[in-house]
Length: 226
Image 1 (cartoon, rainbow, N blue to C red):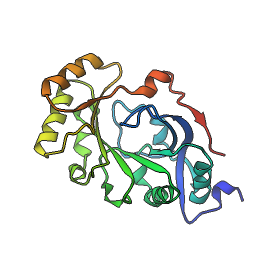
Image 2: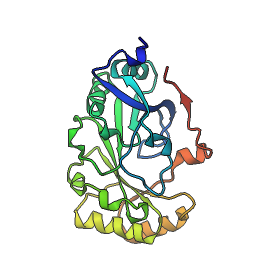
Image 3: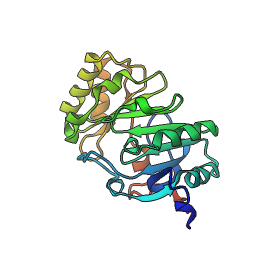
Image 4: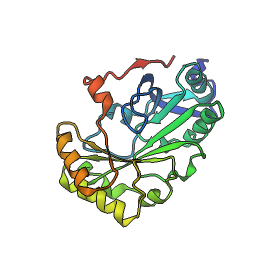
């Protein structure tokens, strides 16, 4: 039996495993191992990882954990697709933490993040109206974020920006540099988004998607999975 399939009790469906430079969050610029899980329940207009919509490749958790722990990066980014669709995702994150890894989990905002173990840093990507998926958000997740988590909005226009700022104020979300605003590439100039942020007089963090600058053709790093 292939080692990829040997742990049938606990397995994850993988789109890809690769090493790269973190392109988003306050960890941008750091080398990281990326575990991209397959499958997504949303179809955002600006999605740049449509390859993760597919069912992916089933991999035993034990084998996948061994692959990740053999790599030198302390930072591991678990992403998708939507990783929380997979029931064993939380356990995988717990094992990474136990092995001494720093774990970021990127989630699309539609699924309860309360299943994740303490120590996982959630990157909550709330979808504004321009995405076409804002009605699918679990807004109670805003109250589940802790001091280490981050909140991200990908902004396509002024409507998206105003929606996000109103949500922050309406839900009394602490704005302390962990709230990230990124422009949709090709839809809005970063300079314009910067002007809107400064006019709010709030410590919102403007973020350019670094991976799109480094790898504009989408080839983000070095593939690993064997």
